[in-house]
Every structure is written in C-alpha cells, then in structure tokens.
Length: 310
Image (tube, rainbow, N blue to C red; front, side, top):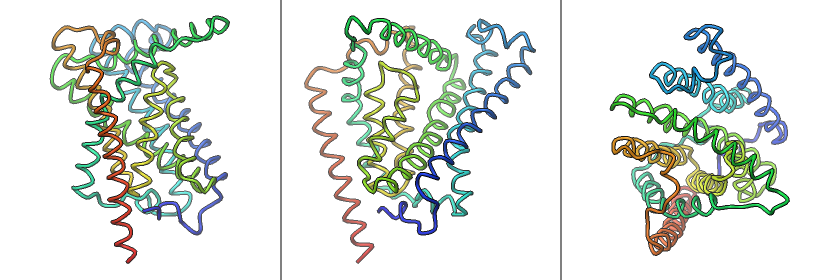
C-alpha cells in the first residue's frame, strides 16, 4: 500500500521538494509566456493592457481564458511532478503508484464523494460567514476583494451556451485540474513530505494546507483543506493516484454540472454558494456516512495489502 514512498535510490526528500519548487517556477514562466502568446495571437498587443477584453464574456474571450487555464495547469501542475520522476529516472507509473484501479475501489471512492458533498457544503457555508476581529478588518476586506475577483474569473470560465461548452468545461475545469493537482500535491508534494517526516498524516495535512492556500480563495479555504486531506488519505490507503484523481474529478465535475444547471434555469452563479441545499440532518447523515466509508476504505485496502504480502 505504501510502496510509492519506498524507492531506495531517490534523492533526499528536501532536494525533491526544492526540485519541485524550481520546476514549478519554470512552469509558471513557461505557462505565462504561452498564455501571453495566446492573448497576443488573438487580440494583438492591445489585449495585454486591456483587462476588459478578456472579461467581456464573449465566445472568443472565453476560449482564450480556457486556453490560458490549460497552459497554466499543464505547465505549473503537470510538468513539475513529471520532471521530478524523469530526474529520478524512475518510471512515472512506479514513482507515483499508478496501480491498475479496481472496480470495487472506484465505486467506493465514488460513494465517498457523493456522500460527503453535503458535509463539504456545510463547511463551505460556515467558511463564507467567517469574520475577523475589528483590528483585522483591512485584512478581511482584502480577502473579500480577492474572493470577488476569483468569483468573477470562475463565472467567466464556467459560462456555457450549449452542450459543447459544457463538455469543454468538464475537460478544462474538471478533468485537467484533477490530473494536474493530484500529480503535484499528492504525487509530488505529499509523497516528498511523507519521506521527509516519516509520518503520512503530517504529510497529508501539510500538503492539503498548501493545496488550499495556493488557490488564494480564503472563504473557501476550509472545504478545500478537508478535500485535499481526503484525497491524500485516498492516495495513502489505495497506493494509487487514480483513485485520488477520480475523487478530485468528481468534486470538480459536480461544480461544473451545477453551474450548467443554474445557467439553464437563469439562476445567477454568484448566488449558488450562498444558500443551503440540505436540511440540518442531511449534514449529520453525510458526516456519519463519510466517516463510515472512509473507515471501510482503509480497512479494505489494508486487508488487500496484507493478502498481497501473504
């Protein structure tokens, strides 16, 4: 189950983390240059100094934003962990534990994500109501402004006009980030922290903290933190990134699908996260089922690992 952390000839974990950081900075530079190239290719140099062009919401600007999203995700999140495995001269499948998934575990991960959605909603609603002490109001106002900016960008990316737009959003906003962010944060960061601290729980929560913080959405920090930890434990117990990627994809695809449904019914996307969709007992049931299913996943994967050793 934990063989993904036990490669004998790898570089020191501190060196690996430094390498990931350097590769990420390199990816940021490459992704930024390519994104600028895409903007200039469509709008010319005038597009670089005119933010209104990209935020207009027309089909061309939406396409440019999605191309930029693909380039950023690919260069910042997919490229660095792949380069780490190549640097270590270990096959990517062995390095990150791309073990062939089992149908029973895929179904179990599917059920975990479905049952935990109300719980994540309750954490998200509580997080959105967070207020800071009076002396930190300038900080809170800054955080709110960053949240509003992120919401505007999210709305632009999620805008759909037809089924083709919805399909593209599933690929660009749900699938690609699920692959890239799991490779980076669970495969690259969590794996290195586990080797560093010799404690997978510490590694999981530090990686989840970084995963949530890097999004710079402070009023969605805690649900993303717990999601990151959930993906981390799925990776730890199954020993395969496939299951963590599935869980991450389901979370993203649910958000994309809800956005599509709201637009079909002319409901503003900005209002989607401001109200509860479940009664209080729905959250309690979600919590109980989530705990039970996570415990079952742990026991099932531990038993399977024991059988393999035997």
